[in-house]
Image (cartoon, rainbow, N blue to C red; front, side, top):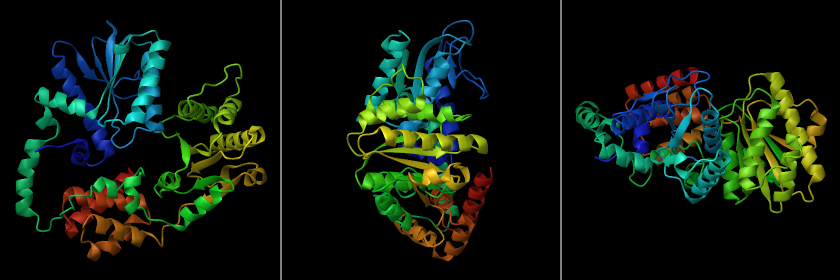
Length: 437
């Protein structure tokens, strides 16, 4: 029996469970690989020095830091931002001296992602005067090879346990699900949209509104968490072959508007391979200068995952967005470049100068799923070959018109490999518990 990292995620229920188990697996690997050295995880707390796992005697000698990131499906701007932040925390730590920094991920990155990695790596090696071996990347295939080489593969991927469970399951479960061999559940139940997900994407009125609005204006997309804002943006830009720069704010800690502008600046520097004018210390103007230099072709700047509980900070950030768009519009020689902002909060509640903002943005609400949830259910059930018609009404009712919740319920039904009433009830309860948690 051979298993991959997608199987690993399923074995641990969800991304959160897999992320924790991945770190444990890496610790087990490095403990066996370096038997004669101290290898340990570090308890997560504020100011942990950017360490997941370290090799060596902390405080006595330079240590190797292992950074474990469970990047399974994406290696985009969000993941790149997390890498930058983790490395910067480790290299600048005053609690230890860094001997080397190793990033472990379960995926194998593509040519564009490799280009970003090596550019970033060599930039940091030059900045800190280190040799090539100081920063390393160990991908998912390399990790599996190491697990097999060290006799850990069956343990990490629970091969023996699963064979026993499968035998018991065959005897006890009366109703089983047979997934089509050519369709992966992760492709059907996607979170991050790519072209392979198109057959399972439900086109709504908001998609049409988005595309029409983008022809004439910047867009401010808003709606509750889990209604598909990010998927809508990615899908329509990819489908229409529009180049875009994705500024994902989810991995950064936001305490002030400047944190958001700094992250946007870093992202567009990477995207356009341009550097800020350090003589100008105004971040907003630095962003605008780069965009004016880079925007000869139609490009969309996407600012996504802005979620800040402090309403006063949120209002400052919204005001910064308006200033940025206004300043860029006044400086740019063409109007090909546009902005798409995505927030949970209704922009009318956080924008202070509403009349000015309305001249630059078209507002689109993504909350409306009441007349689409049933269609999405049918798409998912048919694609996964699930006979759930008798349970459709209860599943839809408990998903509360949230596509994310609906997909989470389907994920658990697939993992249980059982469409019985008991398993469906269990899937619903576990999904609800995760939402509340």
